[in-house]
Image 1 (cartoon, rainbow, N blue to C red):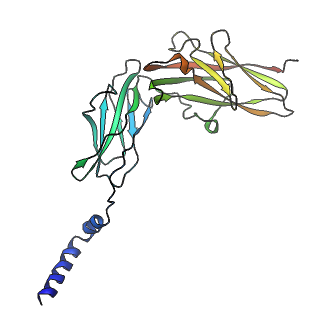
Image 2 (tube, helix red, strand yellow; image 1 turned 135 degrees about the vertical axis):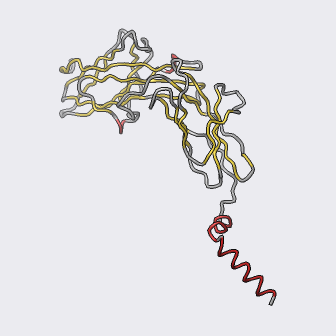
Image 3 (cartoon, rainbow, N blue to C red; image 1 turned 90 degrees about the vertical axis):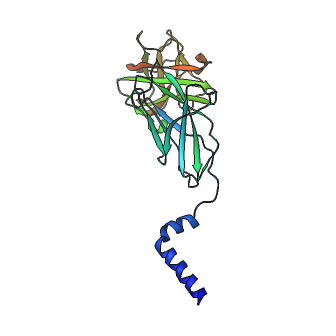
Length: 259
């Protein structure tokens, strides 16, 4: 009789909290994975968006921020179950660098912090053609494009780099010449950027003397040429970087030069 009562009582308990008990019994028993978050910058002025993947083993996410990658990372910018955080109202200072680490809590234990990720706060936004950082997302070029580009780094493994891809039609047996220009109000200087065609192993540095992109078509029909504007990273071998405006403008189309 006592055994029947115990079984019945257990059944009542289970029916009263079945959902919670089911979740507890089927909970992921692995420890949370230590994973580095990702960032998006220059979407809005003086704002950095940090985001990360969901981890079923984590009860809570803790995002730490520091202005020194070798710092203690004791400042918690976010704590909760969301998978992203907008860090707003930051200093710009022509590109203020911030560093973030992610930790995860399970029950009462907070697990190891991740490697840091670099974020940059600036009072400028990225251009309206983004994202065009791959040939597949290349911006179609017609006449004039005003854009910007950036490159920031802590070291070779921690950097933010913008690559701007474009595509242009070139008529048969002709070359299209495009001018690359930036004014003195831009943070960019000669030798700071270069351009390269898709599949090209070499790049041409925009140095103040060479300011033209030459897209040549040796075929018998019109073709699409892809090229990109890239920051010349050998100009930036320390911590920091820059963001600057540039313009690409159609100059002319002409027959290919005779060899």
